[in-house]
Image (cartoon, rainbow, N blue to C red; front, side):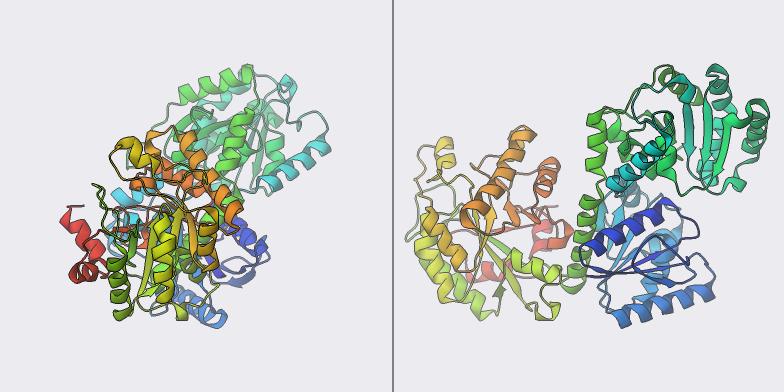
Length: 628
């Protein structure tokens, strides 16, 4: 893809680090990347274009919009990604009338004034860096929930580890050694963050209420103040800092802005901070007292990691509320830790590195780019129809999940007459990621899916589809030893037995150009299983089908349409691009790729019902009819 980042870069804040690392991750994958920013130099190999993004005068905003629009048209940009409200504002107007999607990452709470809700300049898709921020955007800013993805900051822990190791070697086995316990002579508490705004107020409170007591109790302790905008530290903080310098001399290390945060982490016993600072510290094995603009989350442990991460380690509240911090409790936590310093447990460090892995985050963001691109190009409902058995004659079953061969041929004839073009999800993905030109995307697409892999799919379905020149998506079980609908019979022994294809028959669909999707190993209701068992059903089915059929599996269909947020997350983590549901899901495919709406097809579909179920308004009608 051809990606343009737009950001305010007056100083190297967390949002700038985020944008730069994303740019480098995507460049490493072969994507072309440009950056428009008010910086002469950034640590990226992307093409850098200067514009005064931080200058909010209307004259400069117009200049910025003109620069962005010209660049987008000249370089044939596929997606614009903004990293501040100022960047989103100018990009929103720069892209007016162009078929180029706008994605914005929101890094903090937004000011709640009328213009924020009335003028949504954030574009087609929005990335919120934590769960609390997503909730704030939905409930307080009144942003459309369907367009917001909660995706955290990505961190290159390999680079961080390399920098830390280099610093450790430089320092030897003393201060920089990452092992614990650290000798008392090496104790250091580092506050890392900005010193203006809300962060500055927190720093001032630490200087007044916490650091004096710690310095007196621990004679060898050093306190480092690391971060930009130190000149904007509140007056009470400046007074307290001057007193501490007078009382404790060189034990107060006023560092200010530093481009060697990994080095300082290597020399630190306990970090006080939030956001990206907390992430990098924990990933480097440094314990963290999570103190942010919104709250104090305490010492981050395995037990407290999830709620701490939801608030970006204290930086972001889900709802507007008082942000008082109990600094006496923070002091007690710091004292308790410094009396017996302990390493960050390996399990917590691994949890942090997995959750914030740059490779994982870059892949998720790329998926958002693709989704925004498709949402812009194909904004309407694409009918996804769900079939099962295609028998010769009606079945004596209470489960009306069949369409006879003769009736199914009538369906195909109707689709042909209506100029509906069957595609697969694999086809759709190729349009989304740029492998196929959007100019070739069919005017009236339809996706035909078939679950379980019954033998009549081979004898009746495949020849009919080939006659009409159609391909579909076949969802199969990963366990090749399952040769009939044993899940139906287990629930009701009176149900008719329906055989499932053998391997040779399944391979005939691959040879005919069909997409094969996974449908678990054994067809359970996933939400009734412990999550680790559900994960095994999901992951093993993908691996088994890819090995047996020698084809890439990109979609997963939930048996019975049974899913939950945890199951959806597991499907994503297993490497699927789409999770396919039944009668639930978003208005479009891109509303939620892990929860794609499918339309149930029944034995006695009429021309009018086929018209209804393949119409662009059907999904909205279905929701309205059921009050959803």
